[in-house]
Amino acid sequence: MVPFVGDLGKAGKYADKAKNLVKAVDKVGTTKNFKHAVKTLGVNKKQASKVLHAAKKASGHGGADNVIFDIKTGDIISKSGEIIGNLFD
Image (cartoon, rainbow, N blue to C red; front, top):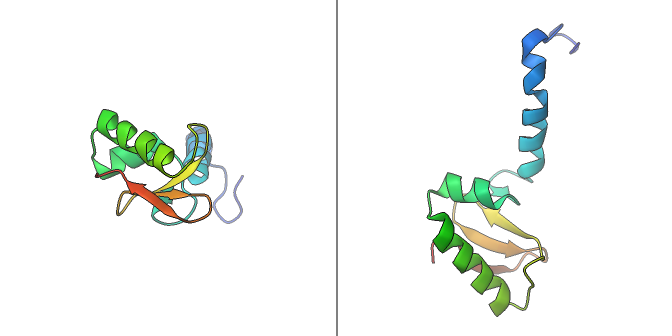
């Protein structure tokens, strides 16, 4: 039961999906989720993957290093806040 709303009934089954979306989006305009970024930006997934791996390699990051994607500009941002590439390249 949600305060001031009452029993969510069937809507409750969507709660997990909503929680996952909230986790994927760190702050307005960014995400850690590559698939979400590619879909939102409308870029080719294979090309974006090549760009991502090249940007990580050029900046000294490994494949397992996490990055953040700006879903407005396509920027690839390292954990330190440095822009290391762009998915549109």
